[in-house]
Length: 256
Image (cartoon, helix red, strand yellow):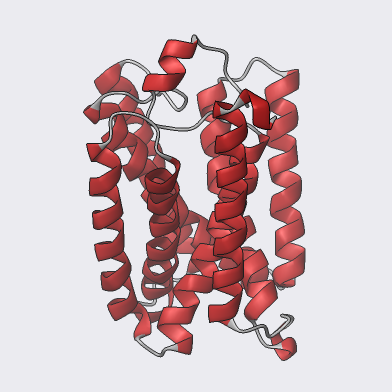
């Protein structure tokens, strides 16, 4: 979902252009959020509560760095995204499993919360901008929505993969198809780009969650039983490479 705008606005915006590369990196980030969150809470046995606190600190630190810059900085931006996916993973797991709210109820509550945030954002600023964030108010709403939507996505992924018994691969296929439908709606309908953006954004989180579980869950549970820490590092490196190449091509015509 790419939006045309003057070059001056592109340079001032604190968020990247919404291109195919954006969505690829986002899926990598959500997958990393699942493997990274589980690595801390399960592999290192820190538990959901302690892991959530650690990732919240990580989120606050990266968000401060992101807020302080005046324009899009790929390292800071994607660090915050990863932070929201990791804290979303452990927070959702804590709510669903430790508190016992369950996947269905927590998904409903979080979905309503996302809608409330978007409605408040719309009435507070007059629009929901996802392609051109330059002021503090819109940036605050932007990151709060992302944080809650990534927590919602974790619960949705677990619900589809386990409660419906589709398994991790089946769940990943479901969410991949739904994202494809959103993409078609973008090209074939007049539905607001902002609405479709957030629909796709929410759906990439459960897609990443089910992909992450497919990689790291035991074979008896339908996974590949890969090491969570190693998987997280490999995904992180792949993310960095894609972001670096995309950023270089965008700013260096000779590299294209």
